[in-house]
Each structure stands twice: as C-alpha cells, then as structure tokens.
Length: 297
Image (cartoon, rainbow, N blue to C red; front, side):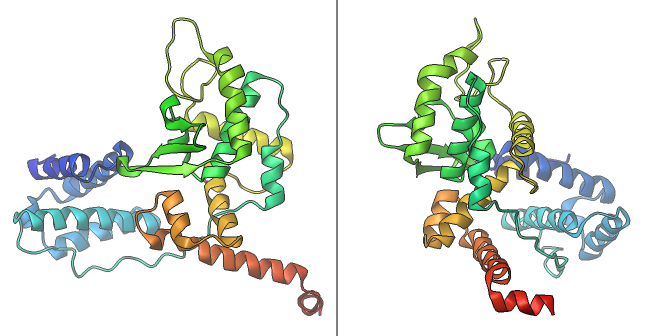
C-alpha cells in the first residue's frame, strides 16, 4: 500500500484510536480501491471515483456495503486534504445510496425473563447466567463483555468500568440481580474453570480456561434460545437493543441511554425512539378492541 495510505491508517490507530477491527476493515477497502485504480491519491479525480463505484455495482454488493466503501474513501481524502496532500476532495459531489433502515430485533419482557431463567447446575451455567444478567443490565456490547477483567468490576460501588470503541471508558451501574450472580460466579465457580498452569485475567472463561470468544458466546446464546422456546432471531446485540428500548419505554432520558451505551453521537441512540414507537404501534393493533375489529372486517 502506498505511503499515504499507510499514514492514514496510522492516523486512525494513534490519533483517532479506532479498534483493530475497524482499521482492518478500512485497510481492506482502501486496498481494493487502490488496486483497482492504481493511481497516486493526488491524481485521482471525481471521474475515477465514479468509475470505481460502477465497478462495485458490478459486484452486486448491498447498498450498505457500497456506502461503507464510499465513506471510507471520502474520509481518506478528507485526511489528504487536511494534510495538504491534495487540493480538492474527489468525493465531495458524490451521494450515498439510500438505505432502508431495518429496526433492530428487540425481546419482550417475557422473552427476556425466559432467556435469563436458565437452569443452574454447573459452573458453566453460573458463568452464563452472570454474563446474560450483566449484558441485559448494562447494555454493553458483547466485545466489551468478553474483554472484562477483574479490575473492571466494582461490586462495592455496584458498577462496571467498560472500555468501548476507541478505548473510551464509561462507568455503568449494575443492579442487585446482576451483582448477586456475579458474586456467586466469582466466589464459587470461576476457580472451577481455571486450568492448571494457565493464568487468564479475563472474567468469563471457556472450557479451555481462556477468555470466552464472541463466537463461543453466540453459539451458547442460540442454544439457550432453542431450549427456552424463543423463536425470535436473537444475537448478542439483541440484549443491547432490548436494554435501551426497555429503558426508553420506562421513561429514561435519551441522553442517559446514550451515555450508558457509549454512543458518541445522540443520532445513533435515536433509533430507539423509532423502535419504541413501532413497538407502541404493534401493541396498539394487538390490544385495542376497535383495531382488532377493523382488522377482521
């Protein structure tokens, strides 16, 4: 990759402090862009970028994926402009494709109760129970959950310190139920998962004595949903969406939810206002006697 692309990736890593996954994603897409055009950034024109976008169209990519390419390329040229490496951004007159925004899946209160009410027999059951309770009571991302260490948990002050995107930290309170099962797991069961001669600082361990992975937790979640009779499509992020939506439905301020979720921009949190309205509408049509009558006519 040419030097200026490398400088940009260093900027994302050291100044913007983006995650490794995000930087890898940017790097791959810039690689595709550079390999297709084979031009020095200062020689790239608006027509060249349009030619590349037409190439993306030929690959039958989704509008969301094409937009992501365009955002990555635009951000790169904004960096070049700021560094005075180029005189004009060749992306400035290009428009992003319109995307129909799908509202995220959210569990009902009953479904949350089903998900959390798992049988507790083994050390792994207590570990899983502590993880699920913590996810739902804090709204943290699964990537944040699996990277928790002992030092992140403060049971004396009933809170957890979460390291989010861009290494930004936030303090989120934990409720009594989550505290109860965390305490049981830490005091009675975590030591059962530790393997001899293997030191691991992560809070939640797998059967090898290492930190549980995203994939491992996702498989576990799918298995629990099947066993508990939850038919809805559920991912680890579903609990985060459910956390935010249930807070909003019960009167929490959107700014507080933004802080708890670790969103840098309030516009990201506002999706939950749309989601809540949709839930209210669905509840209305399911519950209002006249609405049912109209439906049956």
